[in-house]
Length: 319
Image (cartoon, rainbow, N blue to C red; front, side, top):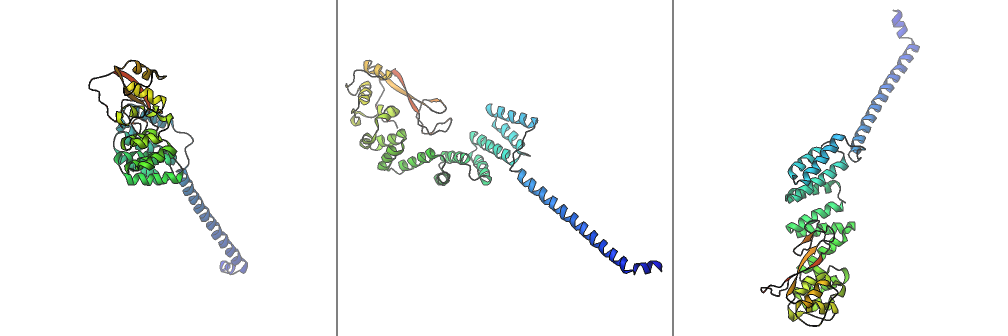
């Protein structure tokens, strides 16, 4: 009975009331604190994807070095497997770097379709990455995907990247459309003498002679060397030397260019040509538009080689 009386005491009721309020507030605070911590953990995990690790483990570094060694040995399949294993657990930046390496290896191994998928995956996360866009461009150039090339060129133009690459493809487009005057204007404004003049000497020699710059004569000496006698010009000292050395005219007695000087005085010899990449310094026995080793579009330096003239030598235009 005393307990019931105490329970009915108004002061006791107030104490119970405030105690309940305190308990409810305390647990509400704990719940809110728990939710806040959980939300912060999610945010931290999200940003971890975009934050590079400060330090890679020793095991990771060793496996990465092994993958690079496999690439140098040409064991691309094993290197790809290793890079894929390294990709698991890597942060976002490292994962994108490894994906690019995997795409490069697929391209080297000739699996262009797989390489395209890898590069497109990178661009899904990093759409403004000109280097990867250029790699896609090279693949689409190999397989002749003109629509894809146009699409990537427009993106690179928006980004203001790889201007020389864009000019290179624009020139190729003009050549494919047989726009002789536009090719000539392009050469005068942008350059690319081998690409532009090589086309013009084949399609319209008179226009080529009209626009050719004297400083570019040596850059296309192989093209000029194989022109038929009916279309040659000798309006500069260097052209006189070239065509005297060729045996078409007798308008020069010597030349400052060693190989031409030898041929002027030794008519039983002739010239052959090799092509030096100005970027990777590889030497090729044939002309190219894009270096097969480093993929540069810088036009090759023409190297002159003196050889004994063969009876079977015939004059022909080689572009």
